[in-house]
Every structure is written in structure tokens, then in C-alpha cells.
Length: 112
Length: 116
Picture (spheres, rainbow over the protein chains, first blue to last red):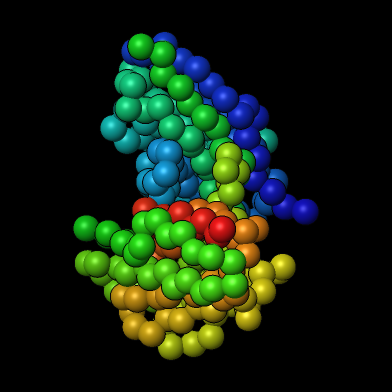
């Protein structure tokens, strides 16, 4: 069936370095993608989104890249800080469907 | 803006009892609210979608008689776990979509349910 998955379950990055979290999706009908950050014991927090008519979107210290050809999504976090340590989920929404489908998540650990 | 609250944040109940969890959109009106369940170290799994004034739509495998959802107003949805069992222990998270939203969902802080 259709799924959204992540390549790596854990990622450790030295503080100050850049990090890249990847996500593969298989539903070609998906037209909206979101990255969420979830800290332990809390709900997901919106980071950045991108629509399928774009291939790149930038926020504060974060960039999302979308490659529709290979159905790949990535989240780049620049100059990582200890507060960036969390689990990151990608989620997709298929055209005409209001439901979010979440990926499995990647735990990012920032090493001081 | 776009704040969603949940109450309670933590609840412990005995097996066989029922527990009600509230989800409120504090500063916006939500046409649709979603309920998710998350087990430790796992992703969020959608349980049901609720629209104000109508019956909730449950995902496959979710028992609607066990997880009662009421969406009484544009700012409040409740999830009642009836006859709770230890396997219902989980992290329950709601989200709300604004009237004017595209697909953005704003998430609550979650409710940790422990059934003993």
C-alpha cells in the first residue's frame, strides 16, 4: 500500500553542523508535504511545508527540498543547536484528501 | 495564534472505566478535528476524523463504540475511551484544521493515558 517512510531512524550531528533528514514517499497523488518536530512527551510542532508545485522552500535555519521524480523529501537544518534534538516526522497529504499520513520518524540528536 | 489545548495532559485510570479527553482550539474555529494515537517510539496513527455537528469517520481497525468522539462545537472535540484496558494505554493527540486553512493541522500537546 501507499506509505511514507524515512531512510534513517536515528541521526547524530555535532552542534553547529548542518543536518539532513530524508523521507521517501510512494503516493504519487500527494501534493502537500509537511515536516513536524516532536519533543518527548509533546505534540508535533509544525516546522515547514511545501506544495508539489515547488521543489524548495526555506524557513529560518530550515530548508525543505522536494524531488517529485524520485518521490523524495528532505529537511535540512542549518547550524544545529541542542534544542533541535527531537524526533522529526514527514507527513503527506494526497490531493482531495484532508488526512495526514505520517512517516516513521527520525530521531535527531545534537551532540554538544 | 493557532493554539490547540488538550485536557487532561496525563490520566491514570483503572481497567474497565471510561476516560474523556478534551481537545480545544483556543484562538480559531476548527471545521475538522483529528484524533491520533501514538505508541512509544512509533509514529502517529490516525484514529478518526471529526467534523462539527456530524458523526466522526473512523479509520479501519478503530472501534467506534470503544472510542467515542463528539465534536459539539467549532472549538471542542472530545474522545472518550470506554471500558479502558491496559492495551489502550498510549499517547493520544488531537489536531485541528482551521476554517480558512489549506491542509494545515495544528496539534495539541497530547494526553498520556495509562490504564492499570
